[in-house]
Amino acid sequence: MNPDETTVRPKRHPPADLPPEKSTRTLDIGGPPAKRIFDQVSIVAVVLDTNMRIVRFNRAAERLFGKAYHEVLGRPYDEVLEIFGRVNRDHIIQRTIALGTPNEAREVEIVDPEDGESYFFDFTVDPVLGDDGKLAGVSVIGLDSTERTLLRRKLADQNRDLLALQRVSNALRKTMDLERAALIIASALTSGESGGYAQAMIFLVDEHRETLQGTVCVDSLGVSDPRGIWRGLTSNDGSVSQSLEKTQPVLARRWGELTEKVRRIKVPLSAEHSVLAHAVRTGETVTHDTLRDQPHLRVHESVLAQFPLKHFAAAPMLADREAIGLIVVDAGPKTMRFSPEQLTMLEMFASQAALAINNALKYQNMVDRAQRDSLTRLYNHGHFQEVLKTEIDRAERYGNQISLVLLDIDHFKKFNDVYGHQTGDKVLRQTALLLNSLVRVSDVAARYGGEEFAVLLPQTPYQAARETAERLRDGVARKATVTGPKGEKLNVTASFGVATFPDHAQSASELVALADEALYLAKERGRNRVCGADQLPEPGEDSTEPPRPNKPRRTSDILRHVKSTPVTPPTRRKSGKVPRKSGKLR
Image 1 (cartoon, rainbow, N blue to C red):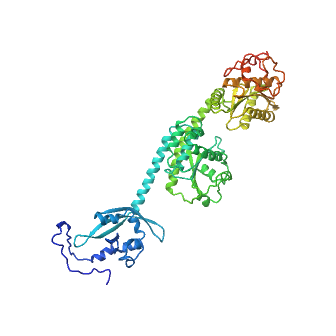
Image 2: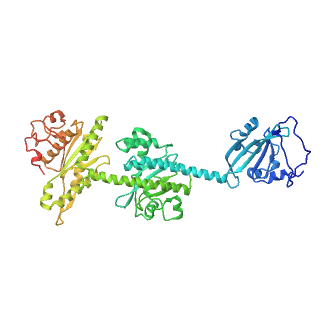
Image 3: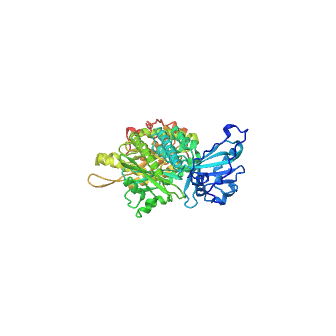
C-alpha cells in the first residue's frame, strides 16, 4: 500500500452516550487526502499511541530527526529517537497521557549532525482522542523558533551586560582612588556575569607618554558576583590591599601576587612590533587574531615573561580621543574567538573605565599637589606627619618595629651663598631623586624642611635601618653631583640620624626627636656619616666622646633630657652646646 494514500474506511458514528462536545465533525471539500497534507506541511508532526510508540511521522520530522518513516513506525520513541528525549525532558508526554491536558516544551535545541549547527523548536503535546472519545495517544507538533530564540538570547545577553555595566558605574562613583577603580573594572570582567574571562589587566600610559605600565591584574578564581568585593573596597579606609584583606583574604593574596607581576611590565610605546603599543597608538581594539592578520605585530617580551597571552583582546581606554591605557582580557587556555558582541561590550567597559580612571588621575594629581613638595616631588612635612602617626599606631597594634631616618645635606648654606640658590635647588632635587631610587616601595620619603629629608621605614628593625641609612649615605656621596654656574662639578654629602620605635621611643614625637639628635651627633663627628639613637651620650657625658660599646640606650634616660615635640627638636643639648636651631652645624 502506498503510504501517501489514505485508506478509505466506512464512516463511523460516535456512540449515542458520547457528550455532544466530544464528537468530531468532518466536511469533505475535496483536495488532497489528509495523509498527504500531514506529510507535506513544514511543521514537525509526530503522533504516539498511549504506549508512546510512533504511529505517525511526517517528512518534516524525518528531516529534523534524521530518521526515515519506516525506521521508526511502531517503535517506542526513546529507542529510535534519542534527540526526542529533549522534547520530553520534563516528562510532558507522560503528563499529557495521564491527565489528558496539553503541555509545551519551548526552545528545545537540536544539533544538525552534518554541520553541527544548532536549531531551536517549540513543541506542543496535545491529547488525541479515538472515535470512541477515549484517549488514543498524543500528537507532538514542533515549530521552528530558531530566529526568535537567538534574538531573545541576544537581547538577554545585552540586557545582562548593560546591567553589569550599570553596577560597575555605580561602584566607580563611590571612589576616586585610581587603584580601587582599576580593581573594580578588572574584577567585573572576570566575574561570571560580565564576561567570565580568566584574567583581566589594566595598563596605563605614563605621564610622559613613553611607556605602557601594568597597574592591576585579577583572575576569576570562581568569582560570580563581585559586588561584595566592591563594597569592601569602597567602604574601608586604608590601602587597597588592606581593604581587600578585611573581606577577601584569599583574593587579597592571589590578586596581590598577580598585580605585583603585572607591575613589572613596561612596554615602550615606541615599540613598533608590540601589539599592545599598536592598540594605544591607533586607538583600535586588538585580539590574538590581529597577530595573524598583521604578522609584524607580536606580544611584547616583557608581557610574555609574566603572562603567556594566547587568546586575548585589548581595548584602549580613550579620554579626549587619546588613549590613557588599555584593558586586556585573556580567555586562558581555552580556545575562543571574540564575537562582535563581546568586543563591543569590552569597548563599552573601556569607555566607562576611561572616564573613571581619568577622573581618578585628575583627583590624584590634585592630592599630590597638596601632599608633595613642589621642588623635589617628595611628600611634604604635613603629609609625612600624618603617615608617621598612622604607621606608629599600626606598629603599636601589631607589635611591629618602625624606623625613621633623618638626613641633612652637609654645608648646604655654601651651595646657596657661593654658587647661588639655583644650584641649591639642583642639590635638593638630585638628593630627592636618589632617595626615591634607593628606598623600597613601602618606604615613605619626604622633604622634612629646608635641606632636611626624612625616610620612614615600616616594619624595619633598627639594624636594618642603619644599613639602609648607610646605603643612602653612600649613594648620595657617590652619585649626587651637580653642575655649578660656571660648569664646575660639585659633590654632595649628607649626615644621617636613625631611631626605631619602640626600641628608642614610645611615640611619634619621641621618634623624631631622637632621630634628630642622632643626626646632630653625626654633624658633630665630621658629617657624611650615620649615627643612631643608641650612640647618643648618657646624661652628663660630652657628645664628642665615643659611645660606650654594646650598651643600649634607655628611653627613660633620654626622655629626661630631651624635650620633644612633633616638629621642633630639643631646645637644649645634653652636651651643653648651643641648641641646633639657633646655630646649625652645616
